[in-house]
Image (cartoon, rainbow over the protein chains, first blue to last red):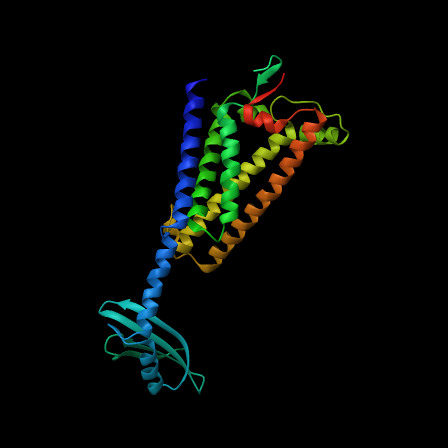
Amino acid sequence: MNIRIIVFSAIALAGTTGLLVTGLSGTGSEHSEHDEHEARENRVVRSLAEPGDILSLEQILQNARQLHAGRALETELEEGDDGMVYEVEILDANGEVWEMKFDARTGELLKEEQEE
Amino acid sequence: MEQNEVRVWDPFVRIFHWSLVLSFTLAYLSGEELEALHNNAGYAVLGLVLLRVAWGFVGSQHARFRDFIYPRTVIKGFLQDTFRQRARRYLGHNPAGGAMIIVMLLSLVITTLTGIAYYGMEDSAGPLAMLAGSPEWSKEMLEELHEFFANLMVLLVFIHIIGVIVEGRLHHENLVRSMLNGRKRA
């Protein structure tokens, strides 16, 4: 048997075995990157519902609706330069869309503009 | 080795074949469910295919592409002969089998690359993580392609198995056994 056959066979066997074994064990116990991504998102979502560092989304929506009563189209929590920022879009009774940004810690209105 | 038998499939071809069967099966069954297993099985498939392509140039006689790539007319003629139960016997891959290998290798390359690209876009992970942030339509297109070629592969596997059964009957030989021990009747 020549050396080439041995090299190719060894790479194929070792590679396949290694990948499949780690894949099978990783499936059971460890978290995949996808799971970690989800866990991180869950943590953020939880912090929106619980009192903590930042105000809850409920609280921010209440503030926003006091400025512009209507239906919330989109809400977003972003990491701004000066900390976390909520962005809220509200469609009011006149059919106009308002975009507002709030400081996530204090609830202070940072920006308010009517969308085209 | 029995007296009238010759070695046809070298050890790498056999290891490749059965490792691919296992890896593809696991990848197919774990799709959308067990991500770690699905990814690793997919990487194994791609690695095996790349090795096989290299082996197609430097491998043993019947493993080389030039041993089993035939002109289209020969493939057609072989299939017609097979229907009439009078196709000649090839020691290595027959013309139709050779064509099937090329189609399967291509299909597997497309399946794995679209899978890796989709994974890069969706989870910003893997070798193509830099594709993260690509537009939604491109992600959906990759997902569709990935699933299409994975399912096409299952269809090809069925045709391949039918081919193995038909040829085995025609020439009274056990081709599965040949892929295990590498030997065929001379």
